[in-house]
Image: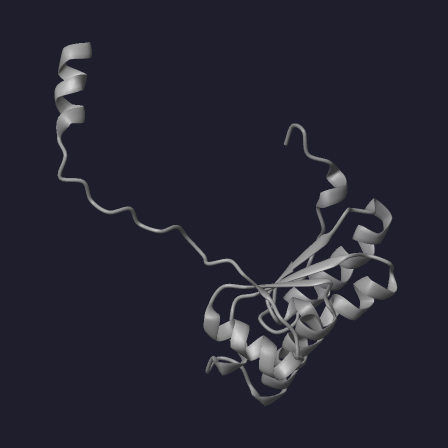
Length: 141
């Protein structure tokens, strides 16, 4: 891709339980060599790597999309690791972004800190009953 550095691409394994964390591990190591202004980690699973990133001198922003450990697809061990990732990211990242007031409450309760609420998506504007723009378009055509 034109304009993209090959330093941004990493290989990773493709399996359900380990690919995200191994990919994040190698991405954090690679980030140390690239020396970005910040590393932005998405999700509670990858947040397991926040301490490593901080030890390597990186500034870290974590986005917590919610309690992934509540999903039925994860076994006991995975759920414990996801909870640990939520705690490590929520407690130690330089800044934490959450997507809802509910997740902000989890971070406040479990990690003892404030977070930055940024909703996913956009607000849907009120529907206008005004049709003047249609008349303007006819006159300008």
